[in-house]
Length: 215
Image (tube, rainbow, N blue to C red; front, top):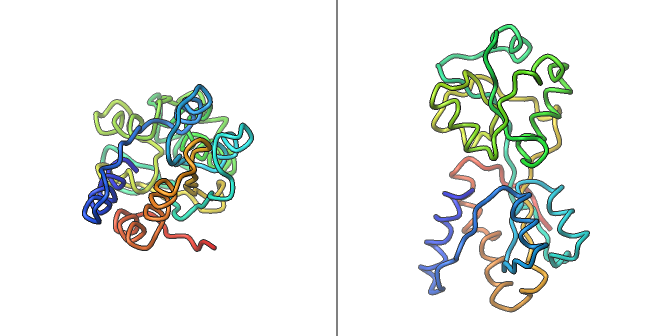
């Protein structure tokens, strides 16, 4: 999301607006920053759960909430080749598999759901290398510190995709956007409309995100 939002920002500036100031972090970190007094114009979460958390605490404007894009969950490997997900416990041996920490990172929670649905969680849990975000998990694979990792498809460009998790093995991966509760201004609404609108969606699609139908 970090890279693609920079591309959206370039287009926003080309339309005559001031550059967007970004704060990139795990969804949980951003939500808690808002609870502690952070005042973003727009909050973008990597899952619906943290947006629900923000909604329950009156940190966003619920009527502006929209989920325009989605993603897929994939297994990446340090080496080329495909694997059967069911073979992961055997293939790992004594090695570890890199994932976002399910307690804080949406990608990690999706990974836990998928591995549980596939009957692999109990076997793989002792071998998890927990990371603070998806990119940190991917970096462990890129460095050869873990032979496999579970990340979003859009983050897998620097590694080899070894398998794709079935869509029905985890909650649908969607990215909700909403105005911050203290920033409901015409300018903020214009920004939200732009970064969820057709021009921005074309950029998301080129980056590999799934474009979702919205009201």
